[in-house]
Length: 361
Ligand code: ATP
Ligand code: MG
Image (cartoon, rainbow, N blue to C red; front, top):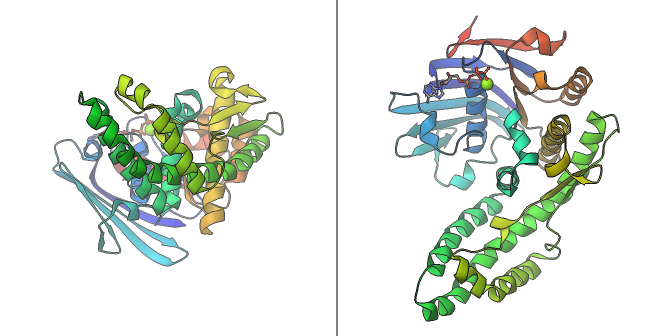
């Protein structure tokens, strides 16, 4: 997968700009607050339809402008493609090769991208929300049925939660099994695909972590143990779990179990990374998870994704930086930093200087 150029109009601090990328390593450099991360964010947004840093699209529109427009010309194994997005105050529109994309599920899966920034440490340190978000964005890029199941699950869940707050208990008890039949159909797809994904991720992340630490540390990722079995079995199990807990959910006023509450366990050298890992270990573990994600995309789609490394090299020590460089030699990488020379240590790269929302030649 290769992104050749990116056009931005009224995106964040960019008025109008075209940025050309080459194969291999691209380095966006410049002082703080010039637009390096904004550019990296635009690439990821075009690939996935989601921003890695905010959940509200309208924040991406340049302050004072009515809309933002962005597009990228790319080349994948199926040839050339152009992906375009327009964001307005009230909505957005995506186009692939000029044709309007009507379903959100079809935005993902055209261009693959993996985004890594210091904020990704949250993947290890923070609560389960961050890990679910990682799984959701990553698996949705690979599987439209997952994305669709997730959107439907969230809608039904919201309705179920509203129902749980109703005071008419007879009607609540009558309606719950009906909602749950629907909910569990989608919950099973989500749980099954997550388990499948973690099965792939776990050995790849362990391998990447061992590589980055020269075999010094062992990383282990385990999925929810309850999700063993076929999709049908999971559906039944999820349904009975919900049925057994009607009283609990009614008392709480929300649904306290299901894939929206699940988590993955991450261990470094046998101890829970969330509680015990050092900053450096956390950073390496998060990076290993992302490198594993790169390999999964490659294995499943036959192509490497575009790797975006936002502000991460300066935080790694020299041996780890070298290892990361070695590891990412075969893929197009977009890297942001303040001092290109300091992070490159002589490595060839397409250097792009960003100054106040413009490419500086
Ligand atoms: P750093 O080295 O500090 O990470 P950066 O070059 O990555 O800096 P960006 O995060 O890309 O900087 O942000 C550049 C500027 O864009 C910031 O000053 C920010 O205020 C501005 N900005 C962000 N969103 C918008 C927006 N919607 N409209 C206008 N400007 C924005
Ligand atoms: Mg930045």
